Length: 301
Image (cartoon, rainbow, N blue to C red):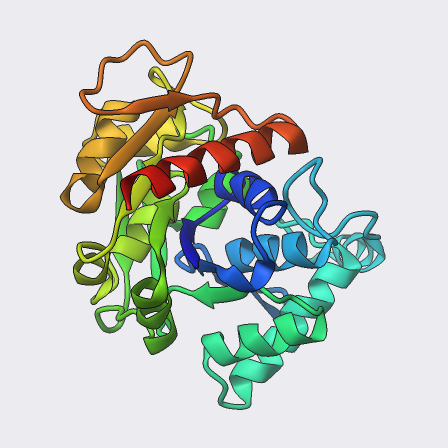
């Protein structure tokens, strides 16, 4: 059993490889929910949905967002009617958000709602939101504090940021299902997602750090040198007060990381790190990296 901590596009590319090697029932994925947002009548949980769509074969792997060959009739009509649809949702994707909102309104936890949706799509992997209580990543800008989705989608990540803040009504606690998945795992992989907005929200959940210290943990860097493979990781790391690099990433994970993976092109010297090709440009490369990571785990446990 392998458990993976995942956020946006980087880690799902690794999951694409893992599911070609392991039975899906042996993969648990703990997902960042701090980018969730109630939007346009639905409840959007982008990192959860990306992984759910990946495992059921629906994910658009050109964009690593939404459902392949989705239509956008509802989005276009809402825009025509003057609605502020700054997130472009496909019709089928929107249906998932609406159903999730209804399930939550009926009293279901986010974990239970996710299990219900995964069941509808025949997902056999264990897809787990990090917590059932709301957590939100906010970005501090010169114009004030905005939701991460406002920063990344509406503003396209092109405005200066001063800081990153997590907001909650009560300290988020990892669910029983999350802690149980870690406990049952042979090893845990921290995937190559944005450290500040994708992975740290999971690590900040009460119970997760203690659970990880009892397991063999492999962390895969999302950086090559001082450049992220994708997304706004560099700007967010800087705003968070960390060096935007593999070294800065390891500094955030050091307390529970047993093995650190950096890219073969990364010239930054990190004692004890191993280097693989982490640039997963196609399914073959995703599978190759997944196999190398799994082999490294087998060598150490």
